[in-house]
Length: 234
Image 1 (cartoon, rainbow, N blue to C red):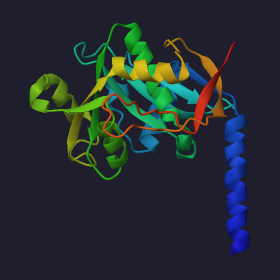
Image 2: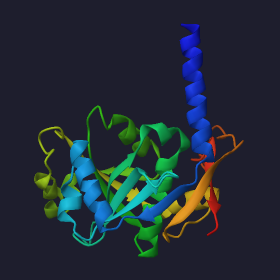
Image 3: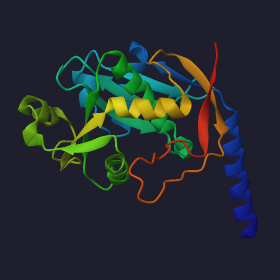
């Protein structure tokens, strides 16, 4: 039993070192990669409504050093111009310990900022699968819940076109994302990516300690805790 645990620790250590030494790439998907994403989302039994209906939607891809996608996030500015939307955020569980989901968010948010957009919208389902992500978002200062009655009903009713509607997705949640505030804090911590992709980076450890003064309303929670990206100049 002890040998088995030691082997598992060694495997985790090898995976960790491999991830730290990897050179990752952030890039925008091309048409063939969007086709691959559609098939991947179907295989994962995740919603494909956005990628099917939003023909001008964009996906930011996170790739490992073999060029394989390990995460992605979609956005669209065209279908409902009053409701710029972010959707389909995914990161391989193996890499979630490195805060790389925040980097996908930054790439999308920077693109929105470059287009003069300060607020974006996110639709989620309130279920056990999404509970952790929903809780994290609502605990942040960047996301807030929106009453669907306050939204354009054409936008709300887009959920009817989703294959998960009233099936896996029994309860819809509408969120507003403060793009401007998110970009401001993230850029202060790790630097700007300006939405200009592709970009390459390595992960580096940081000794930064999160400290929030008790009762200090102005205290900042640092999002990058154990690791942060080191950008590689091309």
